Image (cartoon, rainbow, N blue to C red):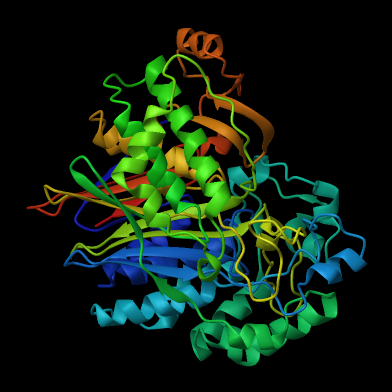
Length: 532
């Protein structure tokens, strides 16, 4: 069922309704969009733990009233003991996906909240941290109903996941996954959030809470040390930009794959495909994705270790060459590395003054490493799985290095004054889903609700899908599917009208003049939009 859009002067969108309501509560108390997002980020960490948590990472794009766009990188580096010789000596040929050895990077999300809230204060925000975290603390302590998304999802390596320290105690009901609607409480996480509200977010890294986190990680055998936590700091990054038709698009620089999202839209635009939802439309998106991913996989690494300037690949002449290499009649075959499986949440907010936020928060795989720290109730990410044990790889494991990230928040500013915050979860699917919903709105005139609702496709792998195919929902025209196959595409029909693995996307658009905001979140998720 399509989500019902919100029309308001301040609005939020999230993949869980309780997170959207937390943001709405903050807006109603006079909070700005950044403060609303902090409340949403805390709440979603409690109510959607298969997709994210405070033991993970986050990335922010914030557009100020005057048009300046800031990026906040809140991803933690590999720990001091996360070395290739350490893992080789333990018999690993590839990095593990679950367990303490997979919990190998610092969790950056809380640091990102802190830096974002500093910006919120500079923009006039005045709400105390206790207010922003109140809903999350209450939900963790009193319990919330397990979401349909979490209940229907079958994690990868499920037996290994369930065997991880404290996982069963925290996330299973008598050894089995909770049913949708069952009430689950997270008392240790409630205490942790209450401590952060009382002592401040820096306590996560350099205070009493940081000491407890470090002790638990050490006891469990993680490569992350207390010194790693104490040394961590988020960074402000200049976003990547693309000038496209009547809009400037913003996305996140490395170590994220934001360049891929902009490349897809830049290449696709040059194909001059005028009719949406046609074979040419889908073929063009797929082929643009292949070329974007080939570039992404060759250059994206830790920001401080880049060997090329990502902006050079967004040059008009380079985009022209990439588009000219596409055969509009046949599918190309390109080598494709796929690090991009992962579970994530995207959320957006725009306040009455026009401050816009696009935010994404993740623990990588479902429930991350599966490790739940006993003293704090934090489940820790496994984002370090995207490193390689090959010293010659683009992203080799080494202490202090940031891993490759699929997480990409997106913003757009149109020449007529419209401002859009948009994004999706979905690993390798994120740049593809962004391109699909943006083009449907900006190029083909769909309203936000229709653009987010329309059937999607995915080239490659994403959450819950291992095969390298073009995956489509049931609502695709059978004639288009047949035509794509005749062009050489391996099309996989997923057998459903609204499929989780094709993204939980959202979009907010603020219009000039009256400041009206259209906000919508994906019917594929358990969320929605709220406004004032």
